[in-house]
Image 1 (cartoon, helix red, strand yellow):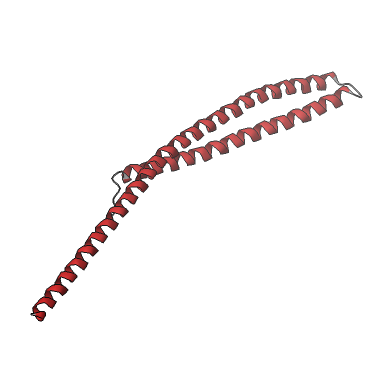
Image 2 (image 1 turned 180 degrees about the vertical axis):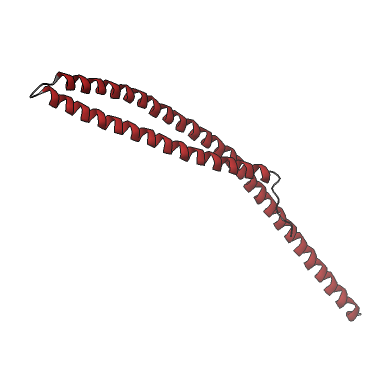
Length: 155
């Protein structure tokens, strides 16, 4: 029996490796995106605390130096928040880009995998036809030998 050999197997293997590599990249990009989101959440929590501190400083006994300090620090945190929002947006775009590359790689691999399956099915059908042909030949040969061995005995 012949062995099935897919002529594009090396290309299919290469596409699988590429897909695995992109999956790893995507995992790293998602982790980086989550870290950026966590940083943003920490900044937001800091802003909330500073806002609460600012409200407390403005009520009761008023200390202008402390109010000015909290307000300055609040502005710094708001700027940091804007930068962090941009970082989150960039990381999200990076994840989307890598995800699109992964989808394309998966589609390319799927095309080759489908081609391999079709060729394998064609190969199996051909092997089955060859086997039936061989069986038919064997049966025909046995019948002809059986008939040939009966003829001399009948004469």
